[in-house]
Image 1: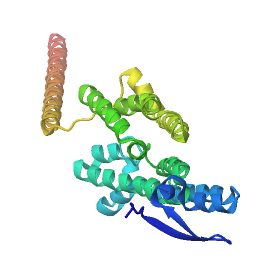
Image 2: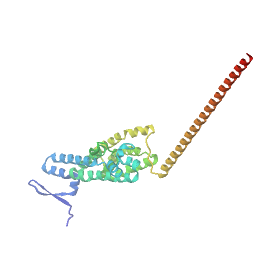
Image 3: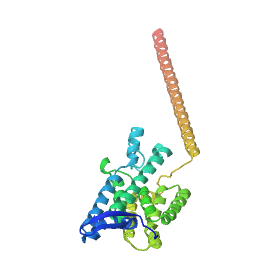
Image 4: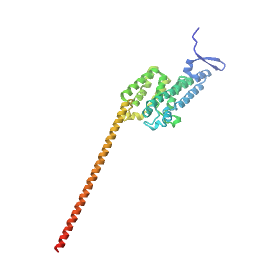
Length: 305
């Protein structure tokens, strides 16, 4: 017996049952296959549009905002950098909240690209769905169009496009962050080299166009970070508890010094008041003495008279 390829059955007008391999479904999507057999591109375009809309709605599920509201009765966007991304979750609520945010954001991106995009529109559908998911994450319709910066979503899209490219960029990110403590620098470096590395690994295609657009979009969203990096004002990230305790100790020492200086100033004020009081007393004594001298002189004059 020959090798039997897994298949899905579709009906097409006058052609009976069409045997469709999963490979064809993966590459073209349901609407792409229907468009091929109906002889028109309308269904393929419809599949791409549906992929984009559904992926955008999934991307708008900004889990940084959702988790901060549900778990902390707070909005992460009111703290730190003001965005709803994983890095701000880490700075504001700690590693646990950041890890859950990372997993949820990665899951929605994978669902958008591998299920919605691939199944509806094939390769083009997956690429368009990835871009739409990034836009949804950055401008979520459910949360006033204020979300994150799309780094995790782009990372998942790269992983879906080519795992080897993802590993190269991840290594660059880790080295950059570990050596500088700037997450934004690692993200920006990866976005700069992402289209070039992908092109050299896979060649030209629709994914390269999406890569250039996505990278430019993420770099645009990091424009303030780039400005702060240039000025040396960007916030560094720390995963060490010792540094936090050190910071607390330094703050405590500063507070003690501040209290000492306040006490010293209060002491100086008291001394000044005492000196002023002594000065006033001495002035009063001199005044009384002068008055007594004047009285004695008057008495002496009256006696002489």
